[in-house]
Length: 599
Image (tube, rainbow, N blue to C red; front, side, top):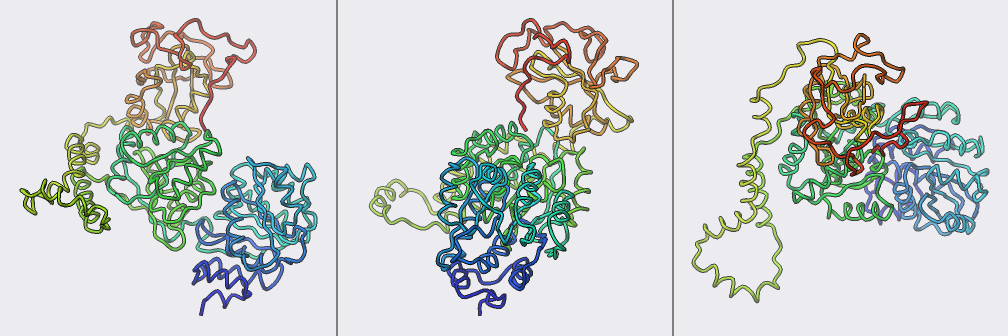
């Protein structure tokens, strides 16, 4: 007997469930479905991404809809176009045996008039993104004043994306006596506020603990020097030959750069970020779902709504600013009851963040060492042997075998095996023979100890307003590159050819390791510790932290620097040679044009 039968679902739904091959309901489905079928009520359901929430609200919603009534009876709000389409497709699969029931997806990037036509033809269920839904309401293209049910799916994601005002407006347009079903992975203050203002004594369903991580996901962290972050990513990929992963970066710039490096190094990778067109995004996601891409490098915003089964690893190339975002990232793996691994690549200065995440998700991280070159070669060798053993023979090769046998006739069985394996294996052994083990490098190198001192460390860096930075954009650039929090970079002072900034002493090693191995537009970045602490005795500063005094030609150690620091005037970021500084605005001191920043 199918366990879904015990939940009170009708025959048409059970037939669809049987077609889909569902046998056992998930925990959130077991808790939510009977409750929602039994009575009209408001509920708040807290469960991790990938636990079957769409079916948890979809099955009872379909059963409660009057298919003979063509008016809109239910609205489902979701954060992204992709998730909107996914929910729509799933609702259509669940309702395939319900005659006359129509579900329409409403989202940006498609014709609003065509979507309005679909609704006018009769749509009992609308699945929508908040922005497009609000637009249609404002234009009078949709009527939700008579709906009976409103579902907020991935509510925390919608609010993180800035849809609070749209959601409030949409809920205010709908009837006060409707049933509101709120599904969320976490319960931040904004979600709780929505529940208080628009729900009537909601019942609460919690799968696991509030804001906790999924029990099917294990958490690991790897401690590396900042300059070894990309090499660590490569080694983790090589140590997991069957990896099918999402790699998270903090900015669009880093996302594109990491993806390009992976592709250049022979990995099946692609970038997913906000600068891609919808057609490019769709093509990337299609390739990822078909497993033509093994490593999808994404920003948090672009990855919202991704629902792809069998992701083996989530890799945090850089940690996010807040823990809730980490929880959403790790929820991309370990879905539908399968096991997954969330990996964090961190530097010494970020260790404290691991403790904070552990307290929130109520799970412990396991500290692991980056595999050595020899370990990776062994893993790859046995993986290759198993691939050869398990490969299915295509008998179209049979006609070529006599000629192949002739070529191989002088080889023994042992020699043949060695040569076959060496074809693939040699590239790994040749690469790792030339590269030191990261663990040995981390433990064996002479480390600069900045922690003995107290307070802040002030740095000189050889980029400035000539490179299209003002104090704010430079602060963002430093923070994003170093993977630090909003307040970890301060006292930023931008000059024409160079700048100063402060961090706490604990971040100093990360700063030196990161920037002294970096190039900007083909020019090597140089960072040095400055004897000038940036305090009030050395410079008078305005309310934004910018300098309004002092000698702009003095460098890191207080010596005078020429405009041609580093030999020759450095190129501008827009490709032009250095010249006269750009005109300043007399009121604010800002340049006429700010550089475009990746978020």
